[in-house]
Amino acid sequence: MEREHFSKLYDEELNDIREKLLEMGGKVELMISNSMKALVERNSELADRTIASDPGINQMEMEIDEKCIQVLARRQPAGRDLRFLTLALKIVTDLERIGDQCVNIANRAKELNEEPILKPYIDLPRMANWTSVMVKEALDAFVRGDEKLAMKVCKDDQFVDDLNVQIQRELLTFMMEDPGTITRSLRLNYISKYLERIADHATNVAEMVIFMVKGKDIRHTIPSTSDEK
Amino acid sequence: MEREHFSKLYDEELNDIREKLLEMGGKVELMISNSMKALVERNSELADRTIASDPGINQMEMEIDEKCIQVLARRQPAGRDLRFLTLALKIVTDLERIGDQCVNIANRAKELNEEPILKPYIDLPRMANWTSVMVKEALDAFVRGDEKLAMKVCKDDQFVDDLNVQIQRELLTFMMEDPGTITRSLRLNYISKYLERIADHATNVAEMVIFMVKGKDIRHTIPSTSDEK
Image (cartoon, rainbow over all chains, first blue to last red; front, side):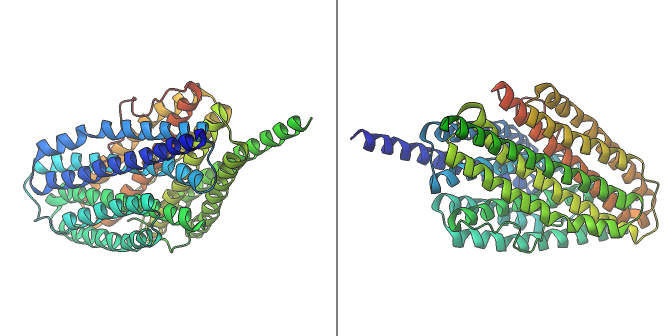
């Protein structure tokens, strides 16, 4: 009976970590869409709010870390649970750094909102939407142990990389033709790279999930597409 | 007697992880200096060798991860050892990503080596040297549990950030004055950002070390300087 009680509590602790991670993921997804909205709708107040939400993400990182360490200490898990916890420790860092990238996007958006618009934003919101889905699916794959979904995320990264290259090429022609556009082009360039990096974080998470599920490390076996220009 | 044997083996396992991390750190430092040398000495063959050394880094990441998980499973550590192992799991990811940044630098160096030199490289090698020292000191701080050294690394990050801003400003004037320099300036710009990101990884490691030593999380309490333009 006591054993059952112990095991029920333990399950609750693992579930709690799972839920906290999903909650953190939801907040990070919101940061991605809000930072992009701040750019597209030229809404600097929304950019400020996005920036202001980052400390909450940092706080969650520390809390989840602490929870994982506590469970490791008290429950001394093995096998699958141990892999889940060690992965959670890594994933939470990726999530936190995605938050940092959103802050970067919001800062560039604020600067761009002060100047005349260079061109209508079409590819960047597409890219943001795509990366946000990747983050969501990578986390879903983690909590459900869904290897197939994790594989999909890894594949989707290529599309984001391609979009990034295309955006950078287009911005280069702007800069070449009119040096007056260089500052704005550079800022848009940065935003494209921040998004590309968010997609890389999601891909890292997905690769680790595949490792957890298969017990086989596919990190660094998929031909790398991450040389970022 | 048996207990003593157990504890000796356990210490050896922790030492092994410590040594492997230092070895990986040494390899990553070499990647930083070689990728920069490839640029400064216009040595694309060295750039290729730097790129070719990355899979070895990735392999080390997976090996150290596995060792940590095995020790967690077999020894069920608590307290300081547990924190050491959970930190090692995080730090190894930072080291691996520093390796990725060096690959990026080497790729940009190869492209730049195909074109006439834009200007003598002075600040970038300084920045590379500085970041390499930060990586070394962050790792030393980790294996020695040296809080003071970790604090120093966090402070040094500001200098790298300042150098990055200065380099970007200078490159901007090149681009404005002569659109023919845009492609090369952008590449140098990227290298500066890759270095700045390496310094951020070192700072992340140092912050986690302070956490390990003090049991107090200073992550996200030092005013962030990491908005990267």
